[in-house]
Length: 470
Image (cartoon, rainbow, N blue to C red):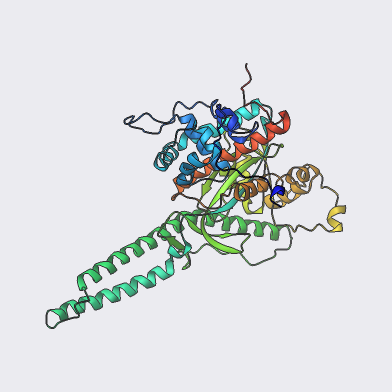
């Protein structure tokens, strides 16, 4: 029976190919990353800003190491350090013998956020020069919730913080009474009254700070909520004047005080409790935004991270995050979460792109009536409100053709980032740092996607992106 099995020999010495290029098959992603990073202007990248100590690892190697490992789902600096010893592709990127430690990798990542953003734009310019990205066209914008590096159980609500402050004040008063009693009679040795008072007062200060932060956030949102209230009230008044039916409850002005359930997280104060998984559960996280090409490449053209739990105020920012060098935007597609008349007007002002933003959610199932419905005329009837005008635009032939590209562009990108690349949780904390991390994820995704596009067009032995000469 033993003759039927492949012989496994772990004792005979073997030699690796003498050329590092031969360590990996042709067309491997690591080859593409190394050759493409070599074309980027990296003179501003730094590892040791003081310029002292041992010779630094070259920025091209460090960037290629980060991009490749992010693209294959390895984001931890300790995992990347380990990969330089155990993963053939990472060893090839590092030249076989270079092994930057996790602190060096983390420092490089932390200190070069601005240059990661510049490299992101430069890669898109190269993609356009290679003919896989058009200069003008549309973008689809959307957001996805990404878990923060913090537990939702390390948070406190505004209401509960107030209750705990009163409880702590009562306990401090009790301890003060015990301290006075200790001058007259003995108290248990295990009870260290001064330490217990100090601990409770420190906890009280943290809770008061949490309440102040929640109240400041609420005040910052008040102006936008008041504008939304006035917009809804004006729309309902206009409908009444036209004799149209007005459905639903009357809009209410925003409350002056924050809701009792608004929360503050002690581990990552800038993260928020957000609905995730289509509203199936809540998690401590951030809202990661992306603007994706709708002209066939599915490349990410821009993005950022916000602490806003929904997309209501993100349309203008999502369009603005696309660098002019990357795309001249003709139209923008977004789901109903982005819609507001003010946001659409701001995007389209001064010759801006045409917005196609859903006004209300629609079911996945299309009825026979939907299939038989004829497109609306391109020119809208006069006197429509902003919301009704958008409804009409989405029912036109051009609106239907444009909007149907939304789901097939931006949503698959989030699926690849989360399922294929494994990016479901930020490793860093704070809004500035998670934005840096998201920029690296977007850069790695674009490398991964661009390699597939060029391979499909040129074959597995595609050359790196070589700029066209003028």
